Image (cartoon, rainbow, N blue to C red; front, top):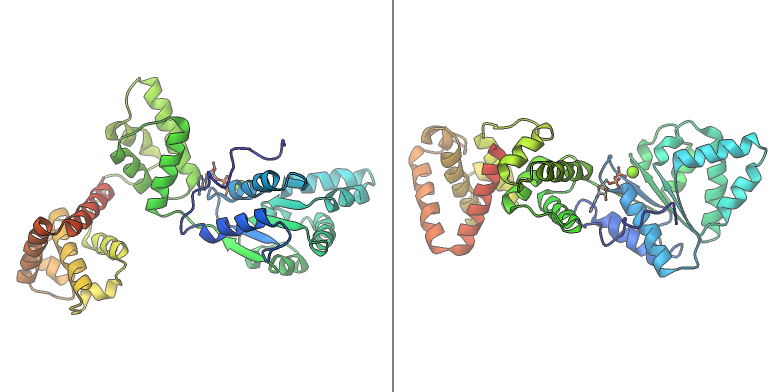
Length: 343
Ligand code: ADP
Ligand code: MG
């Protein structure tokens, strides 16, 4: 099937918090096309986050599970061009009939319907026919349906009949997983600190992650050199925004709060809950190790605490690291995150 890229499978689409709803809905749609409550399924999100991959996976999965179903994947630009060709040849009815024969219609990037009024009219009748006949529609867009400009309200209201699921930027752990999967596919090996460096620093979208891998691969084969952190930093200069940043207490506080899922305000208050106290102590410990702030100024960043509190906290963390291996792992992992952020 020339329209579907066989590499875009559900299996190759790594699931994370960023795309879980969309991916699971896509799986349901592929299992029971037309016979589910996600009709249409609208997948939306910024560029490079996997909309096309996921949309095509649904097509591939339908073909695998239901070989007799007619699946069509088409970009909205192609749909519009086809429509224009047919209208020049007075063949709009043929065009509409062709689309009405489809069991699973996947239209990518519907934002490009913007202002293509006649194409939208054709799509409106196709949509209605397919939906009424229990056929499946899958659409992708770079914006939520409510924010799509230049698309007719009657279409937008139909987009809301099913499920709109967004795809967000993958978090650090998911980026690691995506990198590891791509490396495995490409037979590429890199030390863990390089993978972490890439995942930490390239955090806009998945396409950039792939771009980084390709550049690294090219450089390493060009120089017949293993990919180490030094090479990675050199090659990825253009990808990574500002290098060798000064780490601030603020940054560390945010990282620790993210890590332990502790609200930021709690760190500054007098709360004596054990997990908060520990998060606070670890933050002070890391602030002392990674910033140039004095003990006094560190204390001030925690709701005006005394410098002796900071000394005590640092000592407690050191002691606990010696006796509690789980605690130690947490601190080391955080330490690594701070170090990576400082590169
Ligand atoms: P979009 O259509 O949203 O611009 P793409 O579907 O073209 O994004 O994705 C860009 C690249 O990133 C593709 O090569 C795709 O395979 C990859 N990609 C995106 N999300 C994931 C994911 N969750 N797991 C694996 N690869 C992904
Ligand atoms: Mg796309």
